[in-house]
Image (cartoon, rainbow, N blue to C red; front, top):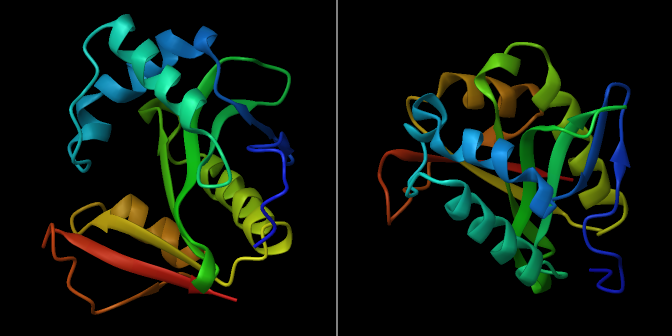
Length: 173
């Protein structure tokens, strides 16, 4: 894998700009990470305060490297994040990683996440030279399952040991 790259470069699609997360994004990150609808499928402690959101952003900024690519999803021409998308859990010898994403509920059903994910997957394959991208989603998260299927991820029968409610999807090039 090409490790001599700028982490989380700006990626631009037809309607979206994917950029690095910034401390100025704390209100939107709080909104994302405290939303009950989004969190019901995620195994994480919700953010309760702007300080929680800032601590999360700081941890992302400090840990960003060739092992973590994390983007704020914005509409082109606007700076306010409406979601996030990331590549993480890299296994360099296998040229493999995992993708994760979340989107404010008011933007669901508009094709935003598929557009963002296609751009990130293109970057992962063409620039990072990855061969495999995994995604874990909750068995009841139909929106995420449909998104992954549209992106040509295949559902695997593997059991996710740490959480039997998760389903593993895989995209191979």
